[in-house]
Length: 222
Image (cartoon, rainbow, N blue to C red):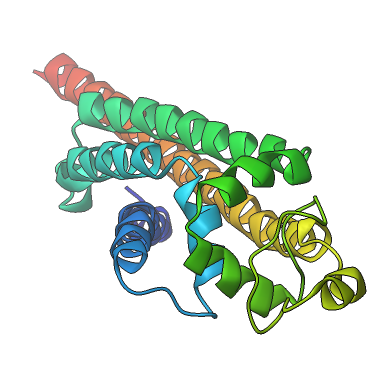
């Protein structure tokens, strides 16, 4: 295996492992954060992340980690062609899995306001009050349904602030845009890793062909 190809192969596989770690630790951190007392900085983002396919992301992390383990013989220059081919197919599956997660989140942004309403309605009055304070709004969409607190003490303030459907929706779109773009970025990394594996497979086949040709020449000399 050419030295440059081998170095690129190692580098992209390590990046692939890092992406697998992010697939696992981001959902884990989110679920841990949700269990803690909510803060103004984290309340809205946690609610949105909780609606994302976190379990699917963690399952994908396990698949990606297994794929990396399959590639270890090649990292130690034990060029097992079958394992490299399995590694390549697992990368394809992981990329499709990641793309599916990203597309699901992207589709949810197409109807953000409608999707946010059931999320809002499921929250306690304390959480709704925090969201009202964070976004300086009152209730979600119905001006007659709101949590009476310091932000929305009376009808006059409710009329002045308006519902949270607008500011919460804007925040959700901006936040989820970053989330699904990140997943699409993971897919791009998967494709780069796949290309490096295919290059290694190609060079391994060529080296084996040259070895066979050399063996035949030596056999002919005898």
